[in-house]
Image (cartoon, rainbow, N blue to C red; front, top):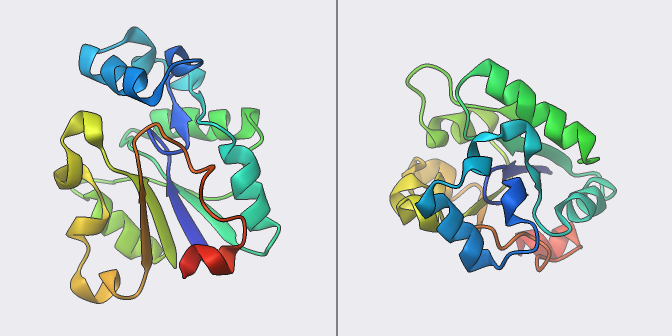
Length: 162
């Protein structure tokens, strides 16, 4: 089973979000908090590392979807994932004129976990609503609150897909 997890806002957040409520983190985005642009300083949201490792321990393949387009920024994402002990996995990103849906269709995960993009426009900025219908029926889409983390999702990957 391949689980694709969106990075920014779903399992990673800006460093000034530490110790803040979810709504305060959203407000940081709306206010343009300076730590949003320190990509190397991003930190896990909640216990995301442990949750993803739990799924990996059940033989799930974990892959990531970055919001970045520039390879140097994607490299920073890879560094953050490694520094915080996230399970190893490919980091997918948009290339050229690709949209998030194009990347997800290229990766073809069984499960796609993303946040609701509350701070940047909601569903029009998300991946799942823009997938081809034949892809939407093929994968399990899980939408979490932006900066709310994935801690509440089931530990059992079979429960995750059902």
